[in-house]
Amino acid sequence: MWKVLAAVLLLGVAPVLPAAGRLEIYCIDVEGGKATLWVSPSGESMLVDTGYPGFNHRDAERIAAAAKSAGVRKIDYLVITHYHSDHAGGVPQFAEKIPIRNFVDHGASVETGQDAEVLFGEYARVREKGTHIVVKPGDTLPIKGLDVQIVSADGNVIAGPLAGAGQPNPDCAGYRQPASNQTENGRSIGMVVTYGSFRAIDLGDLSEDREYNLVCPANKLGTAQLFMVSHHGTDSNSAAFVHALHPRVAIMNNGARKGGAANVWQTVHDTPGLEDFWQLHYALDAGKDHNSPDPFIANIDEICTGEWIKVTADKDGAFTVANKRNKFERTYKK
Image (spheres, rainbow, N blue to C red):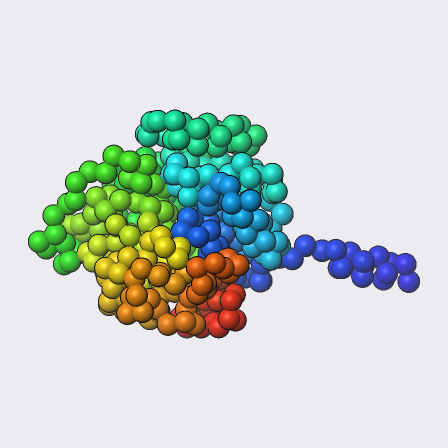
């Protein structure tokens, strides 16, 4: 009897685990910043960026809420794509809520000035409490159950194509390489995450000139089921780049008044083979013609509660995207 009771009690306090055999991705609304939580079927976690500082701990609390929903009690790998406040600023506040084991970044910041130095200094002090990993293109992160390949970092990109990629890109004809970007955006860590037949691409705020180096004259990345729209849907995302990826679904981490540029929205929307375009926010400045329909937008109002978009992927390549705000979801079969 006592053994049965003990077993029941243990079940009652057991941590929530990812759905058996499935990858979970939480695209968390940090109002035009970035924070994406990846939870491997093994239970290991990777958080890509932490949103802004300030705002009464708004972003840290939103990420912690997503982690709780996912059953995540620690972050195994925190990837800071680059040192801008909307990506790295929330690290100190978030680290007060959940332990972080490994800190992954591209090395030193290339930007100077008081704001940039304070931001980097605050991040570096928190980083000292865990293991620091500097990555370069071609590296992988050892997350059990996933293949996480680094394709850009510190201004460099992979020298050769990934397995199965390398085909000539016809959209590069007449497209000249943009001028070199010397900001932290150009240093962004970019990655291709593979789980069986499911493939997702996330390049942070990688600049257009580095995107060019990844897909022109040949596409080094190959195609993907899911594309995390770069740079909040602004500046980057040339047609030559996005079309080469041939995604089935795109998700844009824009804010109500940040990102979601009309021209970028149109480029992604018109990508051959794209089935749906999801957004974290309705982009107020883009107008109705350059926003997705209501079911595909997690936050409609400028003043919002920070609803997320969740992706659940199977190893056979099928995946489901769900909108926390309205419970709308769509499954994309293999």
